[in-house]
Length: 566
Image 1 (cartoon, rainbow, N blue to C red):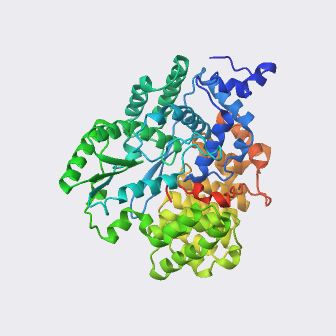
Image 2: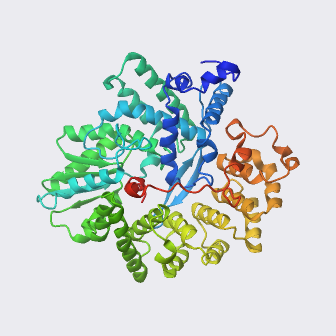
Image 3: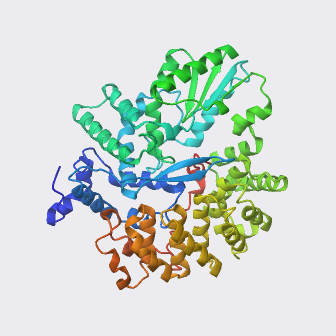
């Protein structure tokens, strides 16, 4: 590994595209600017979204390169990565999914590995795998994968043929999929496939280097006896495809009419017995890679399955959502604009029926959020006060949609009518039980500069109880927004015990303090966070708040921006 001295011509070369493209930094080629584009797109739906959307790094790629090189220096030329933090995010109903939150540069290297490997590995996957397939010629270079919504509809369309072909349909998914994936199995699957890859000898050496770097990262991140991939990450979805490729191949070899989208598996079968046999084989093949089906979500649908059953497994069979999706896929401004009427119809009917827990309601909320952010129409007149009231009142019952609710309230609630209700929710701590939900609400209150003495007292107590939580990170930003500098100052002595996001937010929040207040930080700030405060100050909003304006989606490409979780 090279000596990464940052002097003279040497420094200029290490910042050049050529240095990274040739694999001199990490042992495999990195198209630095392209990886940043892919990463930025992947981060659009981060659960614990960054208040500045990492503009301070994305808009300073040379600074990002310097930091990666400095980390390599510190680790003697080998990228080791840092420990992840486990967070919990509510799911529909009463469950929770876990999140492994990592620092920005670990995330960058993870994405770089994916961007580099996927052209080699994607061609090895079965055409019956519809999810997260490489787009070799995207309309926009920020897209690494073929359109996820289009691919899902293909998945639905193919498997829906069972109803008119007098077949049975086996429907199943995997139990705690990303949580149960083994690091050892992932690495073994990647290495086993190398002989099949179309690549030169030097390219295969670079592929092995990328796999070794990946192994070191996963060793830092996994939990529960070396299991678990970071969820809600494009790179993780790509790796899951590689792991399950052995299952895909074996099911095809056995002659099954088999299809998969991430961890959703469906098999068309002539009879119920045939479907049961397929299920047996799936279970046995999954066992070889340390996974199992989710029995509660496993069902065999007969050819005459009820409409209720069909809609449960084929959401696109709902006429309203079908119409809206078709309008969006038209990519016509006039037609997309017409979809607003249908979206509001869904919202109104769900509100009137009290059905804010339904897939339909979240679907509609997500679409409204995207349309609002695209600048399609003047939302001030388009959305009724009753919807805002419903959003703020249904937080307890519909925690999973908090991110979308907050996006809408942030944009639509011009007079702050919802803010007292949100404050009341946080103060009623028997209701505010989800760390991720509270994170979103504190961030919204901060962006609106909503303050009260009761909130200040709550913030102080929360920081004292657990300054490492996701909620505490958001509180630090809230304190910065409402000018509670004394509480920020009191947190500085705890800097060294903070996980990455909390430490980043404390540096952003403390940038408004006097330089003498920052003396306890001298020598404590790790390489990955150096310069955060000064950089962040350059990317505050017009109001002086540490919030970046969310990038407006392209109106004609809204369908490309829909998250897999929505």
